Image (cartoon, rainbow, N blue to C red; front, side, top):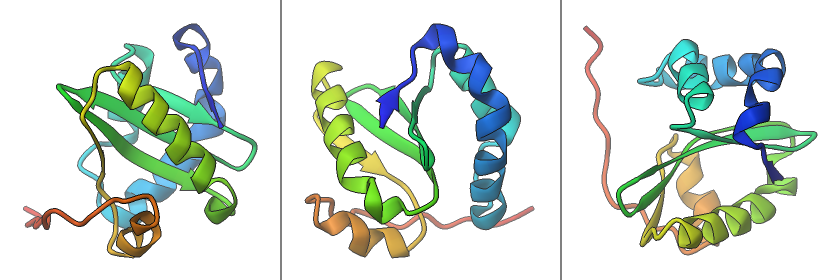
Length: 125
């Protein structure tokens, strides 16, 4: 899993858009595809990429947010991306890494010392 340099993010939009859309369609994500692509283009969000998937991250204060994770065979590369995210979080002066996802991620992330710290409730208008 490699962090894509900001100057090269735009050339991956066609490749990553279907994966972003797939996550948004499953989760009723707060962000739309356009919001995420814009965040990436402006450097507010960062793109991590490998042959099987993508991860989109964002630093907010002292928190390194894993905002979106999509792809195939995630169990085959999740160890690598969490290790890379931890390094990047420390390099960015973060004290925490946070991942917001569906309930199934709680068990998957426990092996990396993530703990469930709250519940997100949403009402569609």
